[in-house]
Image (cartoon, rainbow, N blue to C red; front, side):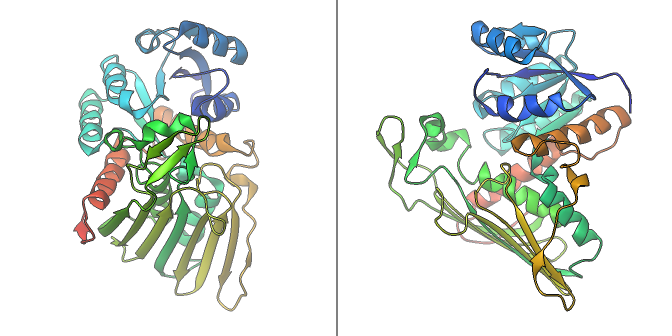
Length: 363
């Protein structure tokens, strides 16, 4: 790998909040393969404050300035999905490599258009599906590949939406607009199912989806305002992967007093169970249990080499690993990090689930 750092510019950085602040910037700070050279915000004073706080050389008041900056090789798009297509198109036109947060687009058509444009221009792309790099997920993937379970028969996943429950922060009120494509099925479930299918090394061949809105309202925590629940707060998905594995998943809005996240994978020789006290796989806190052959189910320690030996625990850990894979892809021409092709495949799956109407859909 080249010793010259890849120069990064992040669109959408606030000094005190946001995913870029809690995940991207701490991740990049741990990686000599990258150098954060520029950040932007639509309020120049916010960009300046963030740049001063994190020691970034260039604070820019617009995305256009960042995309066109000569000291930016990789444009990271960390703003609401409603702005993704416009920004991706500008970055691609400028010939810059692009890392976009998930979801790539508000819908399948948006995502496909961005993928096709980047492909036509020969621009390197990456999508923020960092669940694949979560240490527990990466370790399970290797265990399965090494035959720990024998032939995988089935996988069951239960999760929580965190939002879309009795109440939500005002920050997430915009997710109640279904046209924006950021509902429970588009974000928390999508990250989780992508991580699961990556572990199982196979995509869905057929899928059935059932979506329902059981809570009729939700309360905004900061103001007490009651808003109608206009997106699904219940999602049940079942299907068969291309390798024959049967998958069932159920996500519920809000948080449960019981199980908030659980994956159970059953094989001919063993079983694996992954649990977390929170519903979003990017936050961590996992416990992995397993048994193979005649063993009794017991806790499995996740080897430090899957991230803990290099990266600080927390939301930035999997993002840092994802960036490390991306660096290898850009410099060495490998394909270890998910790109816009993977984003379109996931958008296609979510679209099939949303339009299934309880009937099997072939992917």
